[in-house]
Length: 367
Ligand SMILES: *Cc1c(COP(=O)(O)O)cnc(C)c1O
Image (cartoon, rainbow, N blue to C red; front, side, top):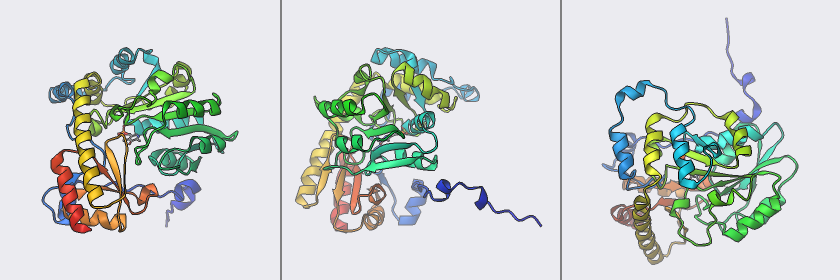
């Protein structure tokens, strides 16, 4: 008799890896927690949805086009991005969300024994992709809720290939100002790839916030990530992009999966990128929610971290996974932060006032 066992086929780094469990769909959660509606404040989605012109593109998408492969290298979107940012179309790669771009960059530069450097409490996908690909992730502790530039530079060795900096950081919302960024780039001295993940840059209004798109012309080893998931409200269509020097991007392009970005997403992104009115409206809504939550959390005497982004962090006097379950029974979904190495913290997406008030009401009840 044939007996099959998969274990001997599995590399150690895969066996050791603990997979991420995504949240269930709303209909399942409603049954599970006995609530009749769910406010999703867990993924930093834009409550305004996509900008109007992108909406029209999605509505008018012809079913006939579903049978046809999309542009394999997002030709028209890259040319739109090149005009928008004043760069060469070959400086851009479009991916199935910025998440996919992380894999592209790691695959392009790492070989066995290499390492990447990032923070211990940041967007976890850099660390995960490195680990399940068999590479080392060196995690440098945050300093006062921000990335520690000196600590990261000090951790570099000859096997370091990439440094990932989330600016502003998810989940803390802190950012490196232009001087910190420049000091860090000088310390790296053009010897390694630096990825600046700017998933939330469109929310930041501070003068001293470094614009990676401009700075990359000075630093050929700089790669910038952006996404249409957050400000542009296209998270469900999965589309993001990276930009860098042609020299570096030409290498990363070799690891791209062609056709991974669907046609609707490409068409909608072309329309979304120019809508400054949508950016302003979203910022206004975020500012209102930020002020309201700041005031209410003061009143409740809960320590909190409010950054420049579309979410805040709150420290609770109870376990975050318990708080998650209790809030779910009130139809409020937040992100518990133990997985981000912030036990007892939750991250809450900023949203419309109705949802913010429902959150504070539910939070008051569970405390
Ligand atoms: C949401 C997010 C991304 C990526 O989002 P995609 O939906 O894959 O484009 C990347 N980095 C950070 C820090 C994020 O929060």
